[in-house]
Image: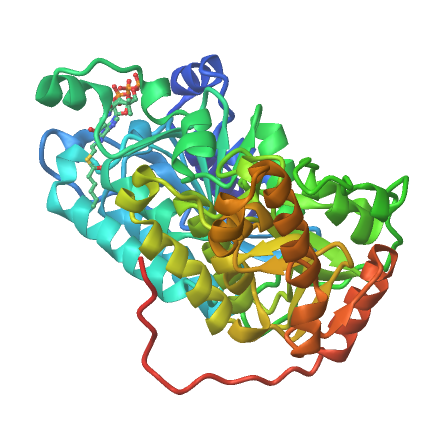
Length: 514
Ligand code: HXC
């Protein structure tokens, strides 16, 4: 054959395989409101940057009539590309080919690109759209999943791993996304569960739709399994691209710096917090008043909203924010908000992202439900994550810092590098009302006008303890600052901690409270 013929032959072969499961299956995919695996990759990566590997891989199964079936690419596309110039490795399961089910060669392709990502130290993006283990391939499929989970774990904390759920992701398949750093879901398209509605009905007699069991909203609002929710695949890809701009390629690098920009926030930062300490406000406004361009990229916005986490930039450098949200449950720490904060702190620490903590909270949420749900072990995760983190850690106490909350929210005692407090901060073992009722019980009980006496004692307590100056006098707070100074001081803190070199005792690994 002449070279020209070889080339034409190659093109023909490529074209054939690139059709995946064929026109009918592609039409079915479109009818479900879903893009094909190839369209997804091309929509996500920079134009002309995608290089595909293993296009011609074929399955090796022989049982149940598989010897007569050709599955193009074995139902998954893998390759490398760039997003805003940042290199990434990617795989996308192709539902048009045997429902994107995972057989031996399908798994080999995924593990190949995972190995490549880890070796090249670049982020890995996995697009999941699959009926799960390929039933005809039996234990080979299970082996494939195990090998993926193993690699997810090896890569954890070394390269960022992103999972995008764009179809079914059922059974054990869900554990790969769960082992990764960020999970993206899309309304009406994503479905994640360990056992589907059919099994649940036959075993437990409970009826539930797939959407109510494991749809996008369920995972974004209720389970906390998802980090980003969107209404369309296009919106989801924009979220992924934006996230990539905030995070580094690997754990030995810093995120790319951007040109510094002042906040766009209109108004004064000191006007955000109401003068009545019981009146809530949106802590995201404080973040927007601080970060470059007022651009705050929130994570897990819909779940455990009593804590706010996400990325922003200070003078062009990525920082992670952990902030109590007084608007929701007064910003308390509970089981879910503790999990949410702790995991994010560990991500930031693993990937060299300084952590800014904004504190305004009355402590851990009391209640039988919380105690029985294990708030002790969940809450401990926050203590562990902050204590373990060696990236620059800055805290600003905006208002309340009571009890366990004061300690947990990156206090000096857990290793904060910079502790700032606004002048209206109240740092105390508990709120003034509760404290006065306990320590002045006798005076209140014996008073003729108990309410008047209680009010006097509350004021007395506030005056003495519920302020930032007692902590400042002990050096637990470095500076009591005016709210308008916050951004400048945070920029300074980040600047002077550029060379921070902090070490923990050598160990194989810690044992965080799970
Ligand atoms: C082989 C599969 C498959 C699978 C789907 N297909 N899932 N083939 N193994 N697991 C094939 C179908 O036979 C069909 O092939 C094509 O994919 C499209 O599937 P449909 O059923 O027509 O699509 P749809 O109606 O959209 O339903 C999608 C679905 C359903 C909900 C995912 O296919 C389904 O329930 N599949 C089985 C899910 C499952 O039980 N998986 C195993 C989970 S256990 P044709 O040739 O007709 O186009 C598991 C263990 C992992 O994953 C453990 C790891 C630790």
